[in-house]
Length: 76
Image (cartoon, rainbow, N blue to C red; front, side):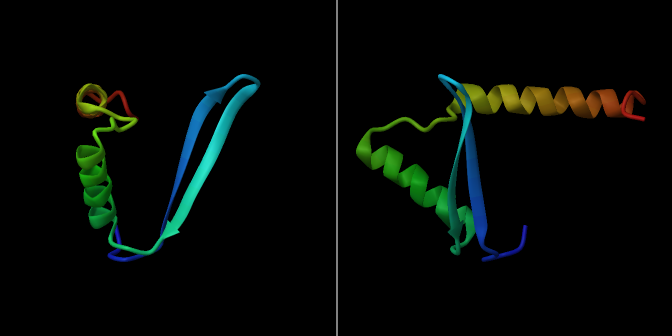
């Protein structure tokens, strides 16, 4: 993470003929501020983000599993 370094977001989704990638950016603002503004927009507009709390929990569980495997020597 480097403050105010231009960031680019790529989202790959399943399309009817295969994966479809959309690119957003470059964004020149602070990455945390960009996330906070997007979160605020979802709250005020009543929309749901593509990644919800359940997705975040699964990601954290997966990362914990990966870390545990690395500790056990499975990542060599």
